[in-house]
Image (cartoon, rainbow, N blue to C red; front, top):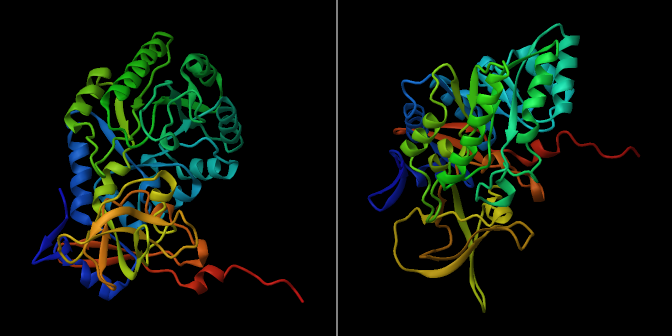
Length: 414
């Protein structure tokens, strides 16, 4: 569903005019639709109705407590990659027993915190990590639940920065080494093998590499169980893409058929780690035009949002649709840029827009990897976040102030 539509010539989030949000909360501001988030989660989970499964929302996509709270109420588990994300899940009322902990560099402190919290499973990404978890669990008098994240060496066909399933990537355990490491894990006194995990990348728009990876994992599962290593769950990761411009992401029903065909045994619980798919289309970045600057080669619309608010265009050359909040047609070609002192500080390039100074713009499909990747570069306070629910709006993160940014800093002594 799209929760962002024009009514009476003005762009709304559900029933709330974006101009009202700008007036009350200010800009830049992230705006999310509760209805769109709920619909995305229920649609994804519903695709696997009738099969024991758990959707573990990938917290890194958008980690605000209001979003985590909403997904937790819907029954979601969580995929985390840091101790800080675990703390966020707990602060949002999430159940640690529905948390899987991924990531290649888990620290001792993070492992201890996760064991104390009683998480569902560690997705182990190296032999060294497996041995560290075993040692720490032994010192704590606990048994650590683990699965191995297996790297199937499959090209996901996505941006190289967000591909994770090739042998040159840092993630996971080589497919050829997995059986021997599972046998090693079975011999350890303080870990308990619970499952297997695979994730080949993000913004996947072709089902073929997904199916290839699933096939490799299915073959490995058969070999593991033939060796007497029983698996309670199979975590197929996340990464399904969304439409930003002209992409054609896989149909969810086709994806579900591929997963269920690869893993038909109902004894295996299926785990999923969607992030972008659930939050990306459900959020926008609201910004205001500060200046219109006409140059010899191109025109610039200088807005109050910048690369510190939405780094994806600068980092990945990612494309986001930009819509004027005041419905219009025609206009001139503009680069939409921010005030940060970098030539790479742009939101969009070469867009036809009918603009005046002071106009509001909505940067669409910004609900994933927007606020969660924001920074304070140029000593810019991070934006506010708002959740819209019908005709109501709730501030789920207040705007930072400069005093917040320097509060933990100290001058040198005289």
